[in-house]
Image (cartoon, rainbow, N blue to C red; front, side, top):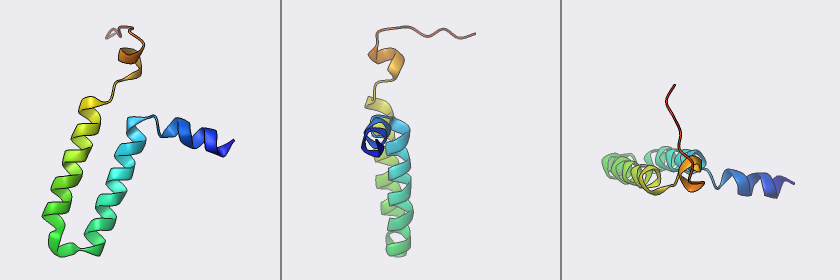
Length: 67
C-alpha cells in the first residue's frame, strides 16, 4: 500500500521539485564553498522539470478555463 502511494507521488512534478530542493539544501551543507554552482544546477533541474512535465489537464487532452 505504501509502495503504491510512493509511486503515485513520484508521478507528480511537485514531488520532484521537493526532491531537488532537498538535494540543494544537502549539497550546500556538505559543500558551502560551491554554493553558487549547486544553486545553479538545482535551479536548472527545477526549471527543466516544470518545462517538460505534462500537466494532468494537458496529458488528458482537456482544456482548463480561467474563472
